[in-house]
Image 1 (cartoon, rainbow, N blue to C red):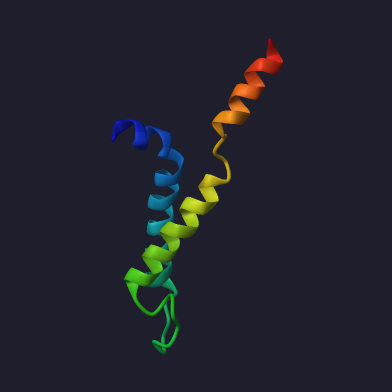
Image 2: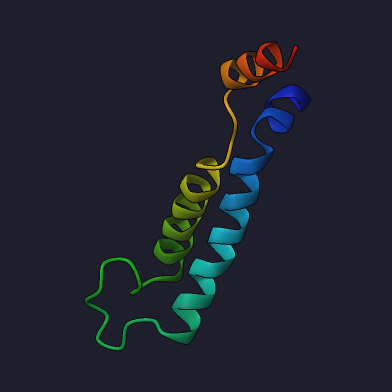
Length: 75
């Protein structure tokens, strides 16, 4: 379990930050009419923010194969 967490630390950080941002967006902007799919409920906004945050932060994760190739080219 610890290895999985350490391997996916960037995704988890992005999910937490995204969830907070999604909740804050719902709280500050929200949807006055209640017909908006994502921002009508705090749970929807939070989950959507967590998903987007994990995907965004995942863009910056280096692949293990790229790390191995990078180390070999420096030798």
